[in-house]
Image 1 (cartoon, one colour):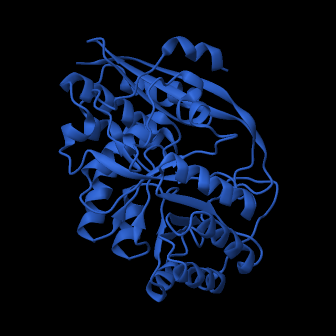
Image 2 (cartoon, rainbow, N blue to C red):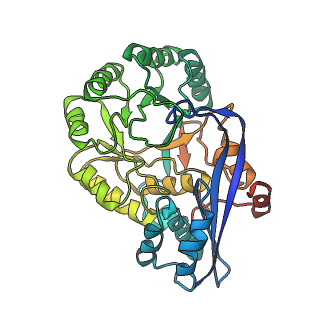
Length: 373
């Protein structure tokens, strides 16, 4: 089998309302910019991949020429091509595994050797909002069947942050788990500086959250502040998590070997390819760390994360990013209908792995043109 074509389309999928992402203070966005990648073989099998942003030019200019004529099964050898092409192009590894799974007529989690076939999921809020609307959102998630929710908290005062978590705990009558993301390791441009945590702020916040039985505190300090992250992890009982914007196997080796985080959160579109995330999961297992992949930008990446969760024998969760009035499942996960399949929870709050071959994602290619830039 040989690769005969690589296509990439820049898409702009509108949101039904304005989105104010907590990790970019002051920013208001009205659409999701996305790049959809299709890798086709001489046996008529097409693999799909994608990532946020418009990077089709880079895919076609710096990746396509070097993949043509190659064996899609040679995932380790081909990894250098998209690794060298720049950040975010590791998503192409998803397409190769989608091809391999389709050729074997097996879903990836079965092809790789699975530990489970379903994963507990948590609802991941996008905006900071207010204590009142986050409490309403927590009730909405709970009614849908979610057992846990992630809040974004980084107000000026710790007391203000605690108002949010207390309101949500009260609204759900203590029957729902909560995670908190401080978004301190993100370096995306934003109109406002936002609140920047130092070690004392992170420590005080961690202890307040620990007293409220919060499941984990995510990205409480800057990405490479390893010394203080280790101090924080050792000084508190709450799990400390991060890693979504770390890149390359070497960085995850640092994070795991040095004990920077309790929970490792690589992203299959930003951190490395799916092939390499399997190695990170194995290393996390060896060091008794949790492996909880970041959401991976769309239903395609989410499927990759779900298959990865299924092969990890330790504690894991699947992140379902969903803000019901703005960043909906239809516009974000399903890319406005380009992805016809849907990854969603059952009544017990678990997500079943796709049983279709490869990633198990169903694509409606006729809808690509509608959103193509």
